[in-house]
Length: 451
Length: 171
Image (cartoon, rainbow over all chains, first blue to last red; front, side):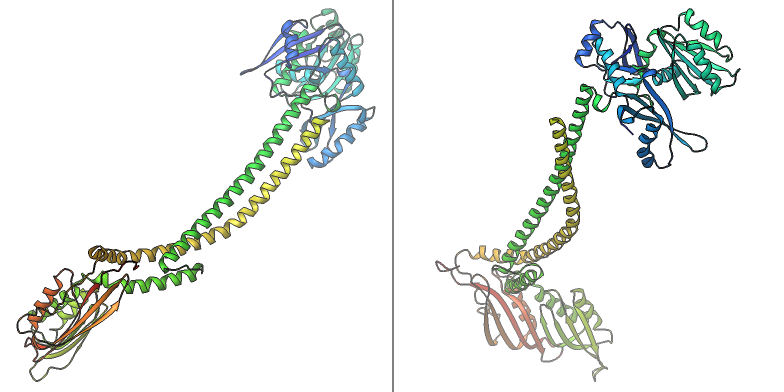
């Protein structure tokens, strides 16, 4: 769908300008926390002119008689397919080629049967040019061109809420023309341009074609002539067949100007900007260009950041790997005592070999003050004395011991085994039957004791 | 028109850079797995080497201690069997030497006694080990003449470290 929303998300203030036959009705709208605050200003107001020069957006509208609003029935459930055929469907609806028009597709509605309808709005480029020229004659160049009927309908819903799902008819009366907007509840049905002279009978025909006589209608009146009884009363009399409540909006003169700027600031769903494509306002074009450039630069920065992060990570990984390699080589060389050209496990094996031979070489320095063997020997001697063991042979080194002798009892040598095992040895005890002295010969072999 | 071209070219350039960044990211993620495994292996190897170095530390410290004791001069533990207790007569004294690092030699003296009082031998060993620099008992073989009699054949192996004085220019 054509990107033709009129919402000015970025603006805090804007002006709505309703171009009438003889004058320009201007309303200044400001976005506030509670919504949009509107104030009518004169078209000659110095602040208005100054703001226009400063680039504050001005919103105009194309009249109902110079534009078309249609509900198009979507032939497909697929949004993508529907999007492709919508211009063709609109082309069929229009009395002139779509290529001569500026158009937009707005709201989507799905009815109870699942049928999808899309609100479309179009205006001839030549009519748009004429309308813009009209604005320019008042030194005003609207940034956004809304559609009159849509603006009337949505502002009417805001100022005069609908009475349930009943029929609503909003008559906007200007000096020379009128616009009738018909809907049901909050759903827009149609927008019709009327001439003031023939407004009553034209509206009568339109309503009779759609609604039975006697159907209750909520009547809303706005526009410059809404407060003029000479204009309103004949119409009311003619349309008496459709009774119902009748409300004239507050400040009806500025209703349309109020409607278009409120829609632009509040981002109403059916808001539109028919000033698009070749007709686009220079300021809006520059804004689109700026936002496009900002998005492109942001994308560029994201890409650069992505590349930078990746390259930095790779660099860091490589430098970490290099530093590990250097440390590895340095340590391997240091341990081996020569330059180790090998890498990885082979280098570790070479280093291990060198470390072991160095350990063997330096072992006497470590054990130089170690008196463990003499202490063990003394303990073994003391154990023999205390437990009445008689040793016949004894051979002890730092790690091993081999002792043979005899004991008074069968279990007498157990204490010797316990003593040797307490020093970390794995001791094995062999005993034989008692000898002719009645003593039990034994042999103890201990291995793997403390150095 | 120039604005449109500038915008279009910025988008094209940004797109190329972004795509390049994405491709680079994908390749980096693929590469990261291999790099992590390689780094883990290398770190494991490095840890192994550090472990080896730590194992050597007490050995190097002990060597350093002896080097400090010796200074630049010679280092001799003396003769262990020069003052033997009364009644302890050596039958045989043998000496072996083994070269170690940095000019040091380990000297092993083996002495055998026949009919020696084992208690006296033990006292002798205690005395020799308490000297500084020490001799230490490396092996002891005893064969009793009569079981439990306290007299027998004894062979003791004593070890000590020794260094000749360093000559100038020696490593």
